[in-house]
Image (cartoon, rainbow, N blue to C red; front, side, top):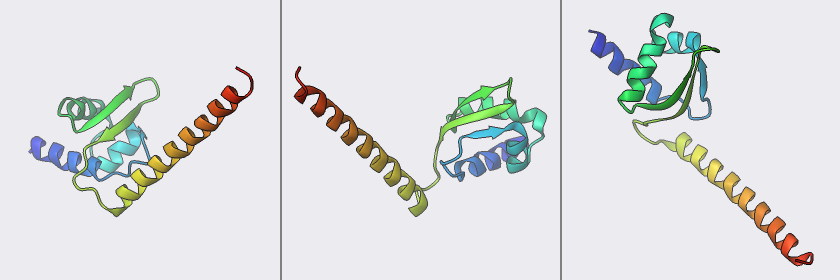
Amino acid sequence: MEEAINKKSYLQICTLSTSTSNFTYSELSKLLNIEEEGIEEWAIEAIQNKIIDAKIDQFNEEIIIKSHIMREIKAPEWKAIQIKIQLWKEKFEAMRHVLAATEGSGQ
């Protein structure tokens, strides 16, 4: 029974939006329907099973999820990826302009 509950919680975590990464133990407890005392153990198992890439912040009682496997990439996820890539492009373009201006200013 416990294995089925874990699999259900893994599926739930895989449907999360990638825009939020910090979750308190309390938030995850409610989201995954797991006792708050079991959240750290759940996170350790999820990390070991490569369901999530995360850090456990015991002091602040948070799980910082860097990434998680996705069941299926749908339009909202593609849009989020597209936005991130566009931001990277803009940052690289800004860096290119700074470097070009630095090179042209007398070096």
